[in-house]
Length: 339
Image (cartoon, rainbow, N blue to C red):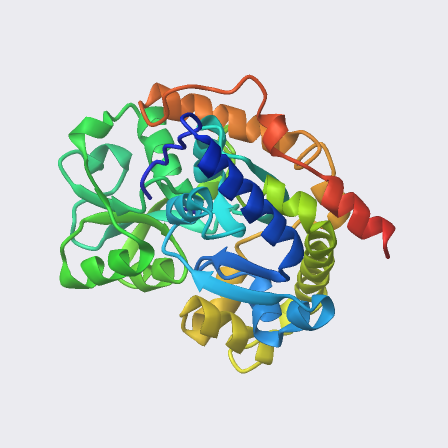
């Protein structure tokens, strides 16, 4: 799920810098520490953060850092500040197109209907065509941004005729409350706040069903993952357990249950909004993760299609011949084998 486009410079490394990188890689192998970039999506992973389970089972020191969007996460990973992060399919596609050395190894969620275009009551917006001349906010380089652009194209509306502004989710909610914007495409918890005084024009699911599905995934620095395979496998196992708990018990979660309180705490959401918001997502099982729909081919195809659209829109400069090179199911396979 998700801001500025990244340029990865791959040339001009002199001997000193190359040596520094080699030392850095060696330090990675010896240091049991990792920085994990997360966002504000309402997902079972937040219960894992709250419990400290992963730290206890692996012995790693984990720095959980919250970012406002997937573009910010990707940029932090490109700088080396972050080793693992949450990002939507759109920023992952952009990063892959730039040649960033990362791997998508887990589908955090199938976004389904969890993101939406909402028009403010009284704005006069009843359809996509009514967005002409209006101010519409969305986090740039996010899945919401991608879906907004796709929706405009499908409905025959030129994006140049719409005032599209770049705001992170908390900024979207604040601008909405000030009356600064007419509409927004965003996800929860900001989505719940704007829905209270707005009308849903379209959802991520309605656009996805027209051939443009989106998802949130976990990506890892490829070199770091190779040196810390056991940690990544343990992470996958913990994620699998957290998702399974939601699938079997989530229908009974209320604003007062520990799981909901944990998700609300780490996502900065109102606990009363969490049960309905999390129900809009779908969380693939490990077997589904490896299926042709996701890590077995579908995710790479979705990244390729997203990148092609972004290039058409002038958002990326070139396309890669094989987006499957940025996707791996190996850690899920090893997690299943270790059961």
